[in-house]
Image 1: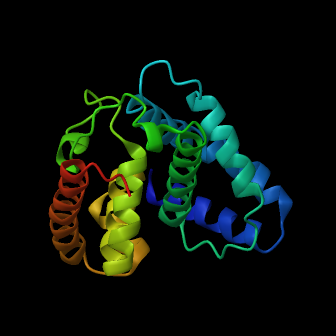
Image 2: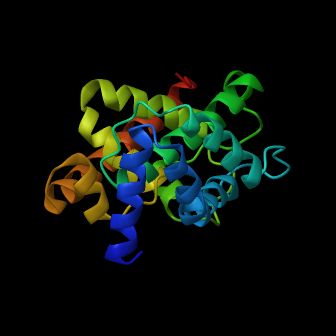
Length: 196
């Protein structure tokens, strides 16, 4: 997105936070494609036959965002980070409601590195990854946010650094360490049969 467009989105987000409803109406067409891209990315990693579709995921995230007026939006990257977090929560809540964590859902466990290999790795266990991320957040919240923003949010190193107010080098270092930590954590979970 060109800088002028990104600045325009940031201004609309700030106007929306200040109660200007017209800003939201102008904002949505500007961010809709990116929200759909995020939703498709999430859904592409889900099991075949998943009943929740990308459009429904965007709509649910939109409904939750509309109720987030109290958020003090920093910029476009912050908006997409929050949107990605909402979509992740929706999918995890959906999976938990369907009982996939308890029964395994017939989905094979994979490591974060395998999940990060790309869309050809379908059906990774989002609930197990979510649980591992929660554990990481208890140990190191920033590293957990780096994974969330980059892996789930699709943000670049620079956008992640901007949201977290750290240097790109710090983001890269946190990314490497967090991936190693999550790989180990998820490996222990699989080895012990513990999904929590």
